[in-house]
Length: 110
Image: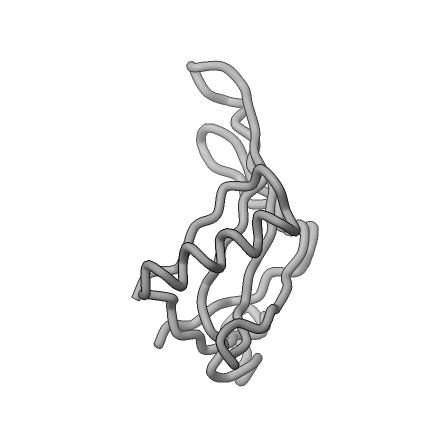
């Protein structure tokens, strides 16, 4: 199990080479479980290599406890089980590609 800290839509995180913004958080049914995903947009705008951007989808995993506690900063925290099965990852990616075409999909790790 891992923990996922929920960030409200519009949250922007800056780094040396750019930033990303959380657009939305969603849940979907998969294999009789509920899967959590987060959609965001990343922008590389302060890099020596030029500028660019992309939409991404982070899949923390299957929800095991929804917003069961608050973190030190007051944001809700959910417990999730990362998706470790390669076949499930492929299926989930295909489902998300239908809803969010041309997005980079990455999965949380155990």
